[in-house]
Image (tube, rainbow, N blue to C red):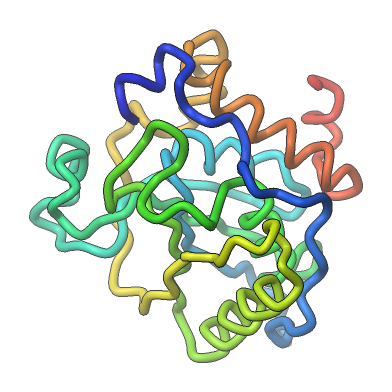
Length: 218
């Protein structure tokens, strides 16, 4: 998180968002045993992305962490330099019988601005890039097809999506104090000015997929 964001300079929602995004035309086949699945994405500060997905019905766990770099430099101080190759990412564990991979991608593209290269609001650097870390060729195909679909539809006022689709190598959980940060620090300036508007946007666009307890706290 950039220090300037603490003073309300970070963007609270995608600048190019143009209403509800279309549903993906393709999705992963549902696993026969409906076993829990995971998806790893990055969309700026993980305090925001984590909070935006925790409220969804079917999402069982969200962990903040680092992906795209090596184990040796997978720590906050090193990643903040922007020189380690990592992105601030989240690992989402979900029930595919309640929410699908493609539906999670739709939330992902709604919750952040995928048209700003290595930047979300005042947070800038490669660690804040928009990325999807695919774990199978099927995931890669769905992600790339949806990006093409959104670009063809000019879903972000014609601004091209810069989200990278990267082969997953490893996910390194972030330090304990980063986990569930928005929930633990609801009055933090960054949470109030940046994270909370992201969460509200997801709640407004995905009313039918928000957990009941989250709706009650709205």
